[in-house]
Image (cartoon, rainbow, N blue to C red):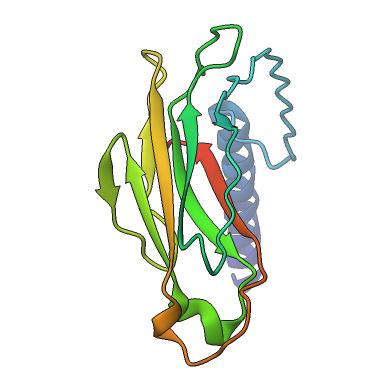
Amino acid sequence: MKKIKRCNLKLITYILILSIVIMLFLTGYSIGKSIMQINIKSQAQIAKPILEVVSNSNLEITDTIEEGECSFTVRNYNVKGEITETDLQYIVTVKDTISEKLKKTVIYELYKNGQKIELQNQATKMMRLTNKIKQEDKYSLKVKYDKQASTEMTDILGKIQVQVHSEQSNT
């Protein structure tokens, strides 16, 4: 009797395993590994950013000439009239090589299209140039030397440089 139960148990186990295997084949389930490869080819053209800074002025500040003005223009087109293909944003920064103890004697004022712009750490906030129309921003940097602001009696030897850093706008 025990032998018959064992044979029946083995038979039931074989039938159960066989039916599971047959079900797996019929349902399309595969235990094998599948590798899929997709190749996508595309051609894209990179937008051509155009930002030109035009300046033709030099200024010299001395003990007798205490004020000076430097003019420059930032525009979104080139001399050929081509407008930038993307919106740009830029920052104007005033850098100098004046010694730290004499920095209080030099005052910078920056004007954009005739309106004064506040400088924070000698830099402007982010400005914007659009790619829809030709745009030109005229800047004027006024530099004043205040010899009463320092007790030092030395010449200010240094260079003042205007830098324009631009990048493509996010929007």
